[in-house]
Image 1 (cartoon, one colour):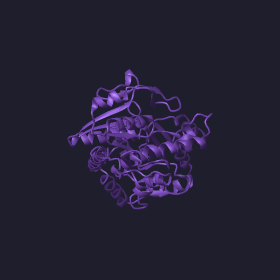
Image 2 (cartoon, helix red, strand yellow; image 1 turned 135 degrees about the vertical axis):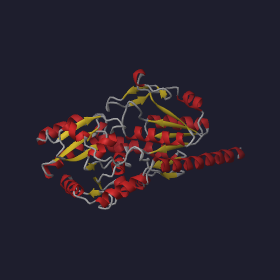
Image 3 (cartoon, helix red, strand yellow; image 1 turned 90 degrees about the horizontal axis):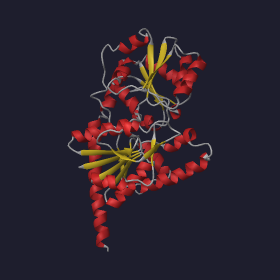
Image 4 (spheres, one colour; image 1 turned 120 degrees about the vertical axis):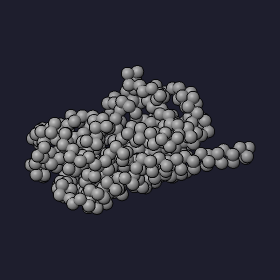
Length: 387
């Protein structure tokens, strides 16, 4: 099968979508299929051989992201690939371009709702645009593109349920998690190098891994340190537009000796960081799955997350992780529980992550592709017979 992934974000951008696209591509290729990446052009110095690009400009409101421009060579690019199915990741301009091409080429269009973009508008929308009206218009667009796609994928049921409350009723629905690379993310015995490098060998480590963006509220994790024992430190792995504000929160709380920023860490090094942690924490109610939390679980680490969206169905509180409903104080209470949890929770966390292996998820995706390809052929044949 020839599959075209049309994605809103790709390298050099580093986020969950890029991680998912790379992982699923590798899994599908390993199963004998051809996968082609189509992304906004980040400029000559960042282009990757084998990736197809649409002309794009830098997005000024979110450093590191690129927006495709109109008009472009979109149809020419996709026809050159000649895919059996086009699969969009994200719902912005690239998703729309992918949909238009699929319609013109009379092939199925599948769309994965990777991000609830309306949640981010308050942080990144230009100040001159009214938030409420813009969100309303955004939902009109989201509803239309999802309802006209051949299939819509979400990583968890709560996201699909939320879409339905906004009038989304797709032709076909797929609840397909983003697979965890369990061959990479796994327990490592006596993993002390990072602690030695940071001079925190005698400390307990809580860790946040992921893009440091405003909607992830990393500053609240910083504030939780005031309610945790003095020998607990925080390592923030990643980078992003909110980093300077989080650093200011660290200074304001007087935790300069308890918080460490690593910047971007390559995937090959990430398992070492996860295995350094005593507990991994997310304070984001934004996640459609929360891949970094799943990676931490695969490394047999206890995790603490909000009881919201994807986390509410992936994690069983006090069985394979810890969920909190309130604010910083409730989060700190659950971190304390996680720091002292017994081994059964760590083992259950790892087993849960292993059930989300990327190979299993790739096969689920292939079954969906087969369905939409056959369904598209039937609709086209029926339409032709009525002429």
